[in-house]
View: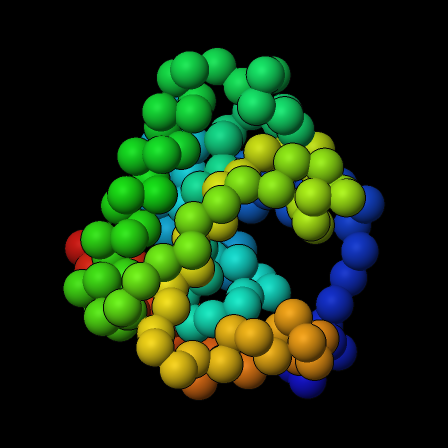
Length: 151
């Protein structure tokens, strides 16, 4: 309810706003790199749902450079390492949705999802019940993963 009651629509790109902001905890931005950054998903399918986002505002794979995609994939790998150490998931869904019809919630800024999975988890509820079930709030998840990064 706190998130819903505080919701605002800026009209801008949430990824660009997070990258240009100065409060990484508030924007849930975990790691900044030269080509991409790692951020928690504000609408997660599971605790620890991360996204590796290219820094430049581009929406398709052909628009991204090889360096940008390499930077994003390196952060996917870092995210998997962080999540494995902190949450011990049994698997991961890693994917990129390009275009609204493909499931992209943010169509004009390229990002790769990293969703930790556990045997018997309830992630199916998001699909069939249009409901999210999370065992901890986003700030707690942020603090746990940021602590693994040493900052």
